[in-house]
Image (tube, rainbow, N blue to C red; front, side):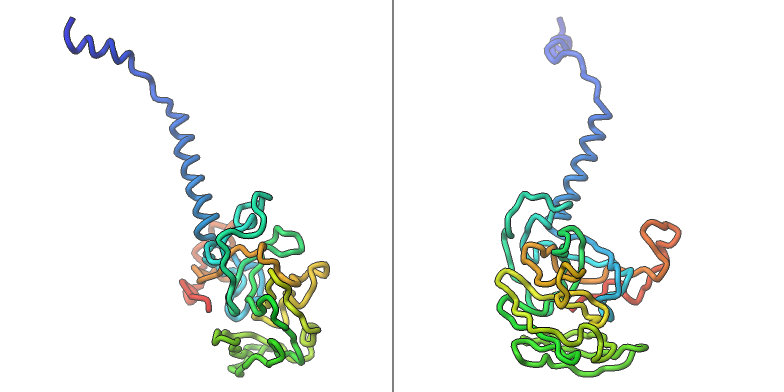
Length: 250
């Protein structure tokens, strides 16, 4: 018997490749890779409302880093109860634009700016923001329709632009909010069009935001669709506002 015949006999007959299994394995590995990226690294979000104007507009598609504040059960899709608190926790800084699960239902994603840290006293008086009894510095910039734009500068030097419709609106005078340990106080940049930390969850707002509910920090606008565009309307995908392409957030 030849050497080649002996080798063939030892190896046995060739097994057919199961193409269906290989395809399934490739898809499963790809989905696992995407899930790991989404949980640990970054996640895109679409802005659903005008509460963060003039820095974020409805239809903006933003890039959020998941590692910025560490991880909790809300870092995982559908928020399964597999973690208590946060791991690898890093505290937000005043002025961060943060995505979080609203305490109202622990499911809905919202985006606001971190204003108050644990122990801070936050108050709005005649439309002016006070932190620990001191008015936050603000400088008038210009008018935008019915709104006036201001540049606010928080303690520590972080500054950003807000919009204000006047000093006689529903949320322009509040109680003094003392931020509890393990919580944060968030507000929208569109001060008269944001149900945020000034409104308790049972009335549709955010109230004090638990650290566990943080999802990540918004870093930039990847791109922005013009009004009328939608992910579910492929014929509108090219209707993009190029002026907001890769716009960083401060």
